[in-house]
Every structure is written in structure tokens, then in C-alpha cells.
Length: 393
Image (cartoon, rainbow, N blue to C red; front, side, top):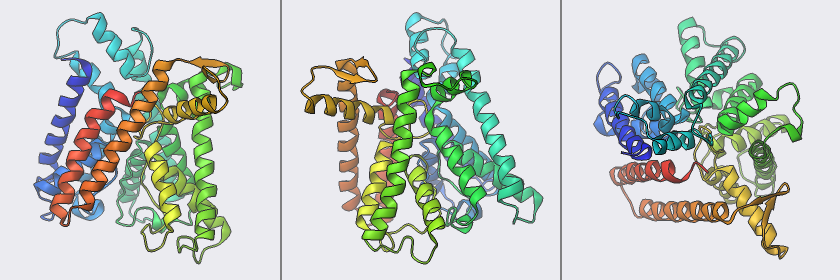
């Protein structure tokens, strides 16, 4: 099998094993059967953040630990992990396999895959630990039990960095809406996880001379697009909920509105946490449309989030600008973008949009929970195969 094929099989095996483990009495209460465990396991490996159980109540500490491990597998990149797992299964290493491994980790070339993977693991470990320590001492200091505080800090740090959206409370992060430390730490972890390995590595390499010319085109493009989307989402939410007279920001001060808008803008695009009640009753239709647009775009290549990727949107915007100006070539920062890249961006966007529309149609036709959950599982299984083949743009 090729690396992508091996990865899809491994992903399905992880979901199957995770389902059986989460359904065991040592991991969950009687409220969690095979179906609930399957839904949760699928959501964890695909880091969607959707759940039909209460993670903090229905899962034991061991079950929460198993869930956290699945978040790490899904967030850090199942393809990157199974690339090395394949080495223990397949004898020999051909040039094609090495090239596939390089593309898997968003590194162009056939060398340095092991070093790159170690760098990804080390970066994730350091950032997750720093986030957990900060949350322990300055964020979740209201939790009296030391053991619970340690685990709560570590779990949410893992979930935030992997853009998973899973929390130990049924109302997500709403209880800490006014805690600026919790909000800032979660935002930073989500953003750093969503930027991708190539960007964080480039920033670290040039940490003493962060000049624009020292950074690669990919890094500059990802940073510019990501922060532009964050700004548009934040300002857009403030405008839509003020003009649309939604109840999303009712009864809170402007400083809290700004923080909540920033948190929702960052989280909606890649994670799934929320620090405000999110429902059609308390947010305007224009606000929901804005959040759905951010969700569709998602994170950056090599990042822990999903979506069509920020670079895909940047390529489409550049192509649109060139077309309106009557230019024959697509140019970004004085660099010509090949037609192959532009066509790939169009294919990813159109294919993803059609898939979302079809799944939305099927869900709208479903009147019971069982059918809706079935389409969710099938949808995520298809997304697993589709993203592994196309989303590493």
C-alpha cells in the first residue's frame, strides 16, 4: 500500500480500537454504549470536537486520557505518525515511498523526515506543557483539587493545540469567559497549532531576525492570511451582532465583547470551543454565516485543524485578482503561481463545498438522532479519506 492508503486503514483501525476502549466500563459510564463511543472516537480522530456525551461526566479519568491520546493522533497528523509506523510493516524503502513521506510532512525532498517528525513532536510537547502550566497556575486556579486542576489544564491544553474543541465541561469555556488568562492561552494554543509545522519551524529558525525577507513565502502567506481572517472574524462578529441585534453580546461590557469576538473568531476557524452560548436563538443569521465561512476555510497546511486551508483561499484570491486585472499569470508577492497549484485550489474548494452541501441536505432530511449520527460518521469517514489525499496544499 502507498502511504495515503496505509494511513486511511490505520485511521479506521484507530477509530475502531478507540470505540471498543471507550465503551469499556473502565473508560465510561453506562450512558456510553458502542454507538456513543463510535461517534466520540470518530470525532476525536478527525478533531471535529462534536460529541453526544458529556466528556467530564460520562468518561472516567482513564477514558479522558484515551480520548486525549486520540486527539494527539488526529491533531498532530495521522499521516505523519503512520508514515513511520509503515516502516515496521513494509520491508524496504523505495524512492516513491520516501517522496510520499516528505509530502506527508509538508517537506519538499526525500531527506530529513525523521528529524522533521522529531521537531513536530518536540514543538507540540513544549507548547502543550507551557500552556498547561500557565492554565494551572493562572487560569484554573479556582479548582481546589490539585489532581483535577493538573488534568484539567493538561487536557484543555492538548485539545486547544490540536484544535479539537473537546472540553471537560458541557458548556465548553463559558464559565471562564471573563478570565483573560484562560482565553489568551487557549487562543495562542489554537493559533500556533493551526499555523502548521513549516511556519513555526521557520519562525523559530529566524527568531533573532524576524524580517519579512528572511521568512519563506509560505510562512508569510500563512501568517498574513491567518491574521487577516482573525481580524475579519473579530470585527465582523462585533458588527453583525450590533447591527443584527442578536443576543450574543447582550449584557456584557465592550472589553468582554471584544475578547469573546476574538475567541469565537479564532476558535470557529479551527477549533470548536466557545465562551458564549451559541445557538440560532442568541446569534444573528449573518453572524452564523460568518462563523460557517471561517469554519469552511479552517487552518493552514500541516496544522492541526481542518478546512480547505488558508493557502487555498490565498491562491483563489490571487487568481481572482489577476483575472479582474486582466493578467495572464497569478502572482503572489512577486512570485508566479503555477496553473497546477491554482487548479488544485479550485478542485479542493469546489469538492469540499459540494461535499458540505450534500451532507447538509442529508442532515436536513433526517428527523431522528440515529440517522443524523449515521450521516455524521459517514461524512467524517469520507472527509478522512478526502483530506488525506487533497488537503496538504
